[in-house]
Image (cartoon, rainbow, N blue to C red):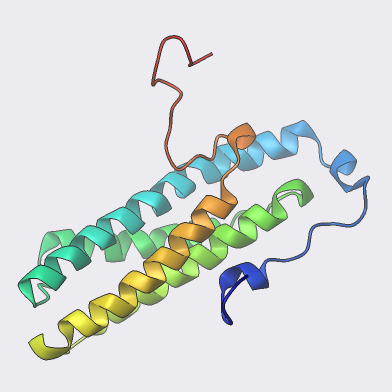
Length: 166
């Protein structure tokens, strides 16, 4: 069950054509994975960094927009958004790419609002709560976009254990 407005309801349907994946070559998927992996990782880090900043704002009851830790994610969000949208996804990765683009849109909305906010201390906690909800939605979409075969994992376990790293 999903609430009205849930991003999962907007996910494009999978291709019904059972031969659609055959038209996509491994080289196309590998090229896509190589192009999108750094952006996928950046998006995950960006969500974490913003969540930390919002935690500080929630505790302190104020925003410090001039603080370098605030300006960095705002700039990174703009760069990441442009880069993700410039990548053409092959058919086998179109749903994942849609989820990444939607997650980036949510993060972009948060950073734009955060950069332009002028609310006083009385509204900080209320605003941070709304932004945190958007970050949760973005994080869920990043998890939806994950695919171990493409190297898109929220947590990289490839170096975790000499027994498990394959």
